[in-house]
Structure formats: C-alpha cells, structure tokens
View (cartoon, rainbow, N blue to C red):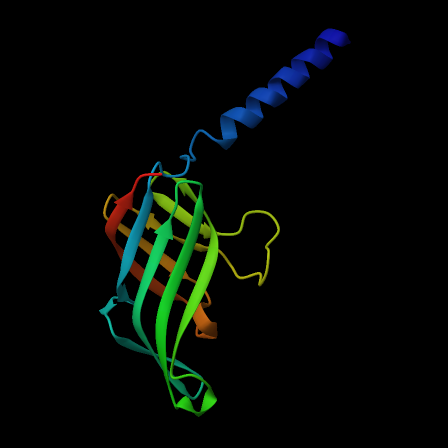
Length: 153
C-alpha cells in the first residue's frame, strides 16, 4: 500500500510539472515599451463609436516589465464633450504570460479591481497584437503595438 501511495504521488507530481510550465515562457528579461500603431487595422487616429458618443483613439502604449507586469494606456478623444473631459486616458494594469508566440495580458487568479476579461494576442520580437474583448464597452477591438525601446532591469 505504501509503495502504491508513493507511485501515485510521484505520478501526480510528474503530471503537474510536465503539463504546466513547459509551454509557458518566463517573463521578459528586460522591460519592453511599445507604441500603439493601429487600432482595428487602421492607423491612428481612428474613430470608433460608443452608443451616441464618437470616440477617437489618438495614441497608446504598452509596457511589459521584467517581473511579469503590464500596463496598457490608450489616449482617447470623445465628442460631444459635454459628457466629461474631451481627452482622457484609459490605463489598464495587469500581468502577462506567454505560451509559444501567444501572449495573454490581464489577471491570473482573483482580480484586484474591475474584473475585465483578459486580452489575448501574438508576440514577436518587434510587435504585440492584442484583442480586447470589451474595450470601453464598445465590443472587441484589435490593437497593434510596435516596439520602441528595451530597458535592462
């Protein structure tokens, strides 16, 4: 019985370690900063709608640091302006993880603030493409970021 229990424990440990981190790369060694190049395949600035408000994505950035944290900022203009500031930033902190050339950005485990869905996309040496399923409540949008700098830790 003791031998069977040890064999089950060893098999469980092997299954857990072989299925979890083999396909997930660790965080980047350096902090990488990206500039938003296009929004839904259109160069900036580009217009998108939210109910009766016209929103324009003006610029944006994405930072992936060496500890696995991320921050995406999008600078937006709204019209009509009677609903608040004409220009504002959306800033979304989170964490990131890789699996092959895929990247997932968001929260892993319990979220710290607003529980928004994670963003998924692809990662290359010079670009990150992300799909945000609910950006500003207007539905799914695709963001293409281009690498602008790499900073050592």
